[in-house]
Amino acid sequence: MANELTAPSAKIQGLTPRQIVAELDKYIIGQDRAKRSVAVALRNRYRRNQLPEKMREEITPKNILMMGPTGVGKTEIARRLAKLMDAPFIKVEATKFTEVGYVGRDVESIIRDLMEASIRVTKQNRMNEKRSVAEEIANEKIIEAIIPGNKKSSAPNGNNPFQFIMGGGRATYNKTTEKIEEKPQDSQTELARDQVRQQLKDGLLEDQYVEIDVEDQPKDNNLDVSQGGTISLGSIFGDMPKRYKKKKMKVKDARKILTEQEAQNLIDMDQVTAEALENCEQNGIVFIDEIDKIASSGYKGGADVSREGVQRDILPIVEGSVVNTKYGPVKTDHILFIGAGAFHVSKPTDLIPELQGRFPIRVELEPLTKHDFYRILTEPDNALLKQHKALLETEGADLKFTDDAVEEIASMAFLMNEQTENIGARRLHTIMEKLLEDISYELPDESKKEIVIDSAFVQEKFGETIRQDDIDRFIL
Image (cartoon, rainbow, N blue to C red; front, side, top):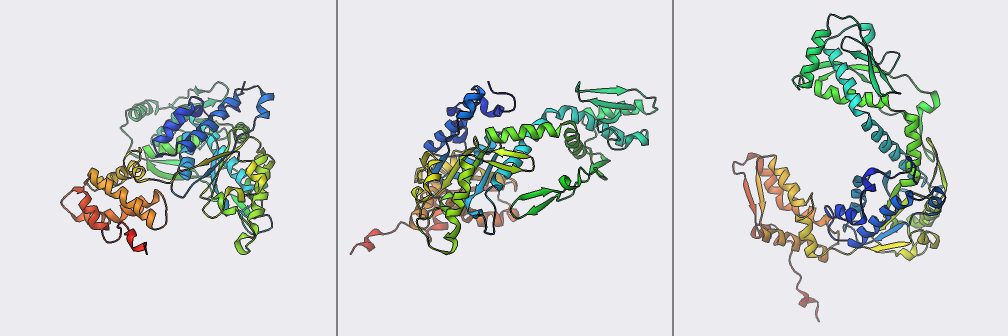
């Protein structure tokens, strides 16, 4: 069975393919085939992790290639996947990379970025486990800031990063027992601190200002190198001592910062790195967008010169290799790759055959219809109409759209995509911004706060710019 390190995130473990599709349906209209393919791929990660280790190593992910015009949901599926799961996930643009020897990003930096994402995910999960203890320690430090005790013992962390002031005495967090052990110490302020502790618990001091010691983190602790990603200065000069600075802020803000600092102090970064490395190798997902832009049907010179070279460089990563990162070597054999592209000019067959073979699952996304536009405007949890309504509510306005107005907006989006460039659902953003531009400008100065958008209003706004083409003029 899967060990603790290779187990997929708890979010995905309990989701069946049907439930994953249902989650994607909340935000993405249509494209059922693409959703099903992604859901099955995610579920297969879970199934694979339930197998014995010997069998598990033999099963490699079935990479997916999504094809379809811009604005139909390819990238949105990737974005929602990232939020749906805790597994390491990155989205990259294929056009950002160049063949080795050219100026640009090295394809191996994809895996380095994925490893960084894995560190963030794993570290955050471990910090969340320690958050309750960290918040308790943070509250005690706030009490110490409000009613100072022994100045010598109130230095941030002291010699022991798990020591702090509690109830008038010295307390230590025992990592083995995961409990706070208090060592009583005579103090005249103990009663006052108990009162402050109760006030904190009751939420009476949230807006009071306190001065706390905040870790002073340098803005950039990495050196950028052209081909090897980044080098941490700490790895060159060793671990540098932490520096602190005093900051004055409200109790509620101080608690957040101190809780974050203490949670970081409570976790073992060596263990986090080991788990993150395993998590990256076994559960990592890379979404390569605009993959069609590196496909070329023949040599054309100029920008095309390195496209096939980029494909050759990506190939070993997709088929399985070892990439060196500052956290250790990462094997890419079991990382899931999802490629996506419009393939307007080029075709999937224009990719080199070896790379085509590494994306065995092909999914073609459908162009959006007028009915799809209507559903995009109204159905998703974050539907565009709901977004604009919420924005104007901040000015005290009540924005309403009639059904015929929504139909008219959907029709105009569909017509504009037919008559000009087809940019998919992004066309709705263009129309909505233009439609509400004058209202948004005048609203802060208007006393009337109830706004009704009907079909007549929409037609008045776009009547001159959008109209059904008269096809008779094309007939000779």
